[in-house]
Length: 171
Image (cartoon, rainbow, N blue to C red; front, side, top):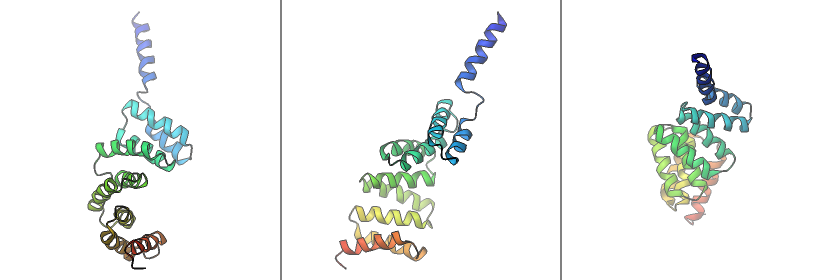
């Protein structure tokens, strides 16, 4: 009788995924570009309570890469809630808000990233684009000019600066 109970208990524990490293397996699948297996693995990691901040971050990246920005925001918000200094989660979250037309919220997230990583030219450019989208043209020009000085070979920055100057009626 005790043996039967022990076998049933072990089977139940195994079915819950204890002892399995779903997060690592999901990362391997993601690196192999098997996003379906990666999503399944990250979801299993969430259910098993394995580093939920990381699992939500990766699920957010996958959703972002699929242009599913609503899902991306949901996962990335949770990742940021768990670790409010996850620079990449904040950056992608800001970008997801920018791509869904919520420049004000995007600016909030990009400001947080700029405080954590003040030398990030990618974030400076994204922050500038968010400012431009919210019609804060002068602030956008300042931010984009800083990004241009740090990375003078990035055509995205010049395009955004051009857009800013057109909005300002300089060009």
